[in-house]
Image (cartoon, rainbow, N blue to C red; front, side, top):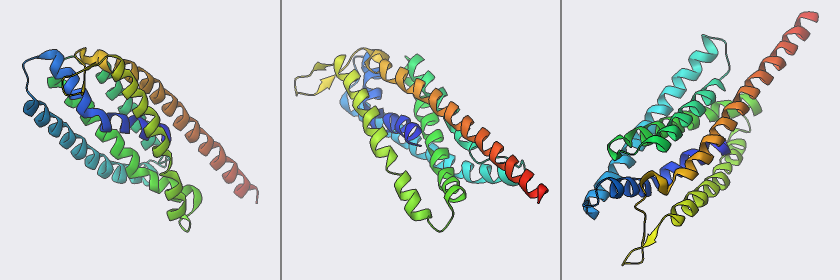
Length: 216
């Protein structure tokens, strides 16, 4: 959870810088009001897609468990893959008009992640300790989110110049943050491998339990 939420939080917390970097590189005549409007647009896209992801993961995880007899953790695999697509888009998009793919996919994956994780925690540790266990789980984004945010900021600062008002401005387009998204793409791969291992471990455990019940 910490890995995947950190990936999402990096995009969510820094979408304004990403918007500024791409638009200033694409069209150096844009003014501050134009940039603020587009920042607000991408915040809205993130929010709407996150809401949609939470709805889809709730219904989808129930279908996976009750109809397909699978594990809810498959929703985390889906979230990891969508996050991977978002990172690839961030690494390749130079046209700021297409930046909605980054914010939209990131919001969707983040929503799926947070929509299904409470159910996974309840199934794993039991419903009685849900509030305590879920509370402890939600501490992980505090660490991972700060780590990824600091790394993004470090990369962005290396490509920035100090503006007349003391603010940092980057005119390198996607080069302003590309190294950060290379790292998060690797984190997506790690998250995907980890969730697939969890699913395999669950199947092995369930198979042993079924075998034990049959022997009894």
